[in-house]
Image (tube, rainbow, N blue to C red):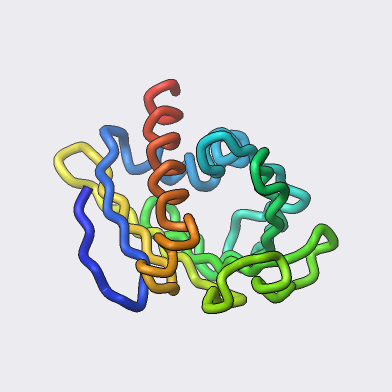
Length: 162
């Protein structure tokens, strides 16, 4: 896994031994997404999930140690087998945005971040590049960065089961 560090963003690059269609499907098929889109030991539940440009979602990641973390967001772009761009906003169970500090998060954590997932084919494998508009240092400190790594690792497993 290669990391090019830009202090203003999270950047993760990973190669999957799977077709670009399979990797895209792991992000856009709700059944597959629920199998991997939560860190180790956690589960995810969607109250709303519309994976299309302009579509919205409302999710909850349940962590046995820390409780529930609700998020809302909007898919800014869903381009088949190429890219997925969405916002991530801390929210409550009703889908109302909340200040991250109010739920015990780091005071520097932004209320909204933008996640960009780019896919490209390389020698029959799929290269995924993920960027999130928050500093990698802060994301590492808060656990967001290791969570992405765990989730992408789980996605590798899901892809090899199908």
